[in-house]
Length: 405
Image (cartoon, rainbow, N blue to C red; front, side, top):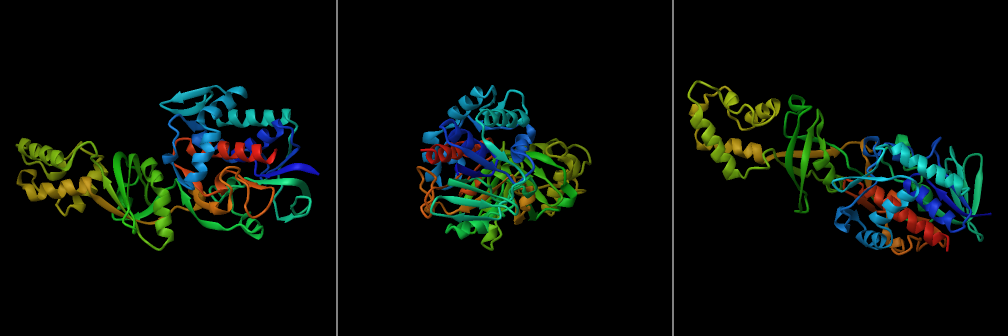
């Protein structure tokens, strides 16, 4: 009988396997894909932003208790040192930490070599169909095989990027062991929206500041490069507030997204600037021509239409009422978030196993003895920037350490 079986050869599972094996435990690592680390290979556009120097619990959502405890045990400096030990030098880009090779494949290769060195039994194409708890430990079944061990770590992920392995197939099996799930929704994803003619503005990228207004009366702010698509909005500032928008939509609501396309100017500053532009018009330029160069042309034309001002109106005829309308659409355009993109297009999920059933210090189950969890399957998620991978390393380390005691 093996000491520990680990389900899921993603970052959390591999970290748990390495940590436990270094302490002398016999490990079987099960992966339903044909190879390990498939999801990891896609992170950071293939460059693998694996942690961040600005590491704080405020960068995470969900069970903050788990995060605070976890980071006190294994933080970003420990992660950097761990990969340095594996031969992966860190590249620091404004606090965002990548492998110096800028290749996620380097990280996966380093983990693979370490697991080989530690003689970890890695079994791919092993799709778990059931788990049985016995007097001696756990039996994990596939259609044609089974694995027995004294202890079990589940690091199977949730539903994000199902083609890469996180397809939610473990949910019912985990529930059969007595654990319950909080609602699981797509996060770090784009949203289908209404309020602008997105077919007219698709492809536009622009710096903006967003304010999400939820049905609970909460307002969350985010900024960065917005991507306008044919279905709605995407990009980093949308990703950063995506958990809360997805949860609000899950509850049957339609959150509003207030979009400021001129974040470097206050309302008053923009009004004064537009007055000056009008004053400088000495010919028969139209409103559309007068506003040329302020924003992307496609976006500016759509905002003019949103203001109910004709783009062909003579700019010299604009009064303060018109200019205030233009200020309003440039700095306070509201779009309505109808639904998130599917799990297929989400980088992560929000929600997961109810952490009231998890010991925050050991990540062990309060329901089943010798059962541990790690990674995304727990109700913890971070913003963009290496935070979700840091949670994978942190939780994997803790689960591997505690299970091997």
